[in-house]
Length: 88
Image 1 (cartoon, rainbow, N blue to C red):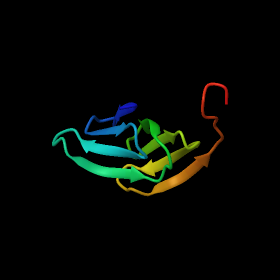
Image 2 (tube, rainbow, N blue to C red):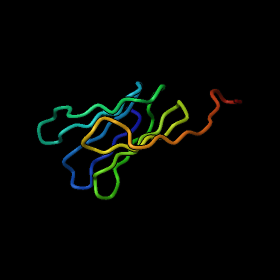
Image 3 (cartoon, helix red, strand yellow):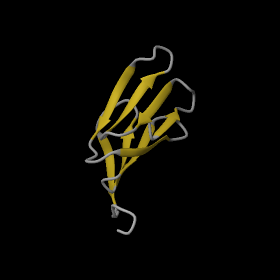
């Protein structure tokens, strides 16, 4: 795992690590409920908005994505630049 985040009310856990997806889990049942796919490299960070309706992810592909927590399609993709390796 690279990052985990609880929703504001603690009912959903978001996880990322090692692949191109973020996963949302029901804390109560322990079951995976949603897979957020669209990045083209490892997803390294995940966080919920204060109201729990949005999820933000960031990836080694140089993008950050904003998602609705209940859907699996990104609302918006933010593109940046990155360099691989210690010295670019």
